[in-house]
Length: 116
Length: 112
Image (cartoon, rainbow over all chains, first blue to last red; front, top):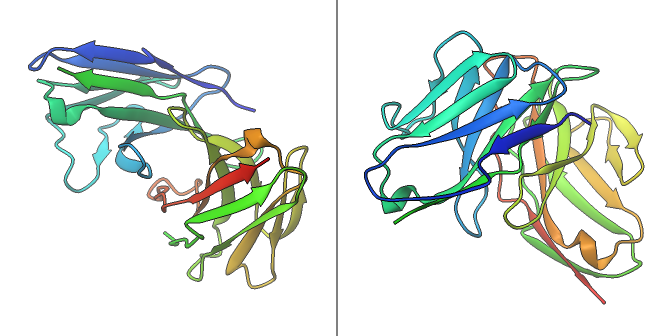
């Protein structure tokens, strides 16, 4: 199957700093990637849709100025959490659409963000 | 985007066949049905995808009735390592405006 990677897998930062998370499709090109957030014992919550070469589409309630998304190439999307606060601590997961043979969404391994 | 409903949790024993059913009454013509498995602190892992009838791969089978308003994931002879959360998702990934919204999933607990 298609492989999606994320980096870093785990990050701890101080309140007020910014953190960048990378999502890469390793063996396929992805025009569309998604970013999710997951709190303990809860389901994944869609934050935004990232389309290569255009602005991301954010879900209601997600601040676009706080969660900056850049999909600069067909294999890379980045999520930057700006001015992080403890309530931003969560598990962030990206996914990418692999379009062969059918359109299927593949997920990265996730990034655990802890804001102190 | 079709909304899905699954049992919140299920228990089974090692060696048993486990069937998890998902309801998606509002499925659209172009929607596919995809099942994922998620372990704690990991991203969801693709299990199987189908459009209609039956699909089988090396790890599972997916049964979809003619009206496509539900689907059943079948895991043959489960082991302890199959303890995980299973998500049924419905959507049209060919549609740029479509997006996958996760339901609560089914927490499967395999007992020895």
